[in-house]
Image (cartoon, rainbow, N blue to C red):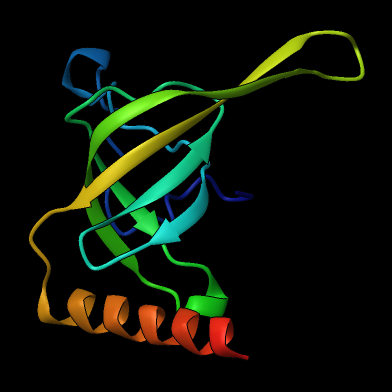
Length: 120
């Protein structure tokens, strides 16, 4: 800023560590299957039973987020990467929690897309 004036519309306030939600973080997962009751996902770190999570549907299934709760999580397979380090892959089962009407419509549309793809 050449003249030293503030261009923001309001002051930014730093969130102290004790007020932040340290349990909130993004964990990339691969969506393996989908049903009206829930989904199964694959990921690199275990997920605790009861954890509430958002599942983002991929573009091919119409995009949108669905809210689920982890029911189970277990090691599915293990392999060594190119550096020789062992990498574990976990599978977790999710059950859907309450949906908004829009989320229910997105899930129904995604399931129809999957049904059509399996027939073709």
